[in-house]
Amino acid sequence: FMSQMMNLKTPEGCQPGSLTCKMVISSDGTVKDVKVMRGIDEPTDAAAVKIISTTGKWTPAKYKGKAVASQLMLKVIFR
Image (cartoon, rainbow, N blue to C red; front, side, top):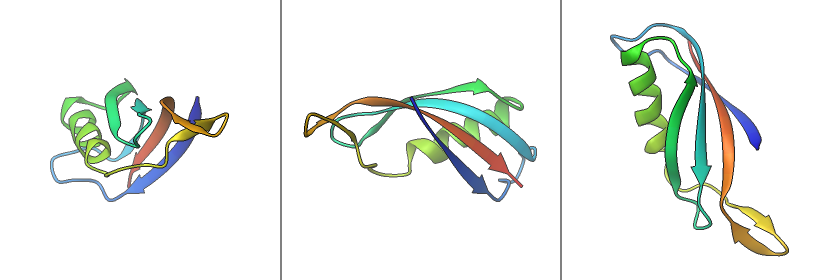
């Protein structure tokens, strides 16, 4: 597991605060399987999943010089 943090403006209709999501970064850098591990409420959790899912490609982890899938914990803070 790796961990990162996103600090974002609170979307309309959502509550400010922090939540934790788990996701998979595939070997090609695609974000997959975004799940809220510790959330705030349903609309805020759904907004976080949508934001994470649309971030585009990430740099995949490498093992022995080859790109591999990895899990990432991401703390999202809506301010």
